[in-house]
Length: 209
Image (cartoon, rainbow, N blue to C red; front, side, top):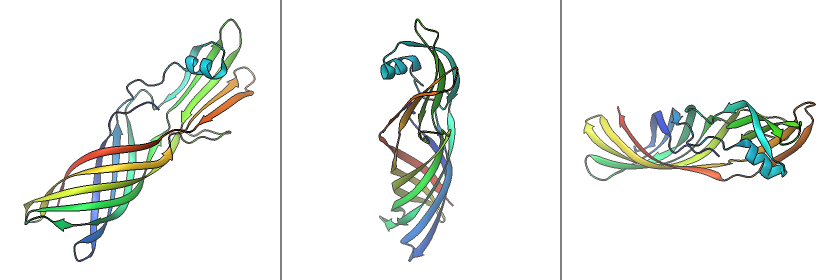
């Protein structure tokens, strides 16, 4: 999968205590900004030659989504937290939650021409959100997250927040490639591959009011 080296999240969090100001629930919504992948797609002709065993060259790129530009993704998380005081000004809150984010499934569609032949094929490569018969450019990724947040009181009702978090996505980054005859649109072959599960490590800063 084309690699995004980092993600910057802007989010607003609502904390509600349900038991003696030590246990509560939280809900946050935000936007995740991801930079353009460093390398984008490799040459699709090389992938087709490796899969089908016939040399090709890329004649035309028809579709290229999520492989050459930065992107923004909506995120929402709901979970529980607890709060422990370390001293008069510093407290720590472990948080556990579940959420989802929407992404544009990285997709590439190209016209391939077979070497020393007039045969042409329409090749489509995609991560997430696919099945054998239809493709979608949108995908919803669920996740579980654990956060350890520290709060340092700077004013009677305001705290400086900083913390660490780990996010795990149970959905695999599955990959598919599909080849159809360019002239009559007959399906030649479809290949689906199981990908790895995604995870993220993060550092957060903020302020509570």
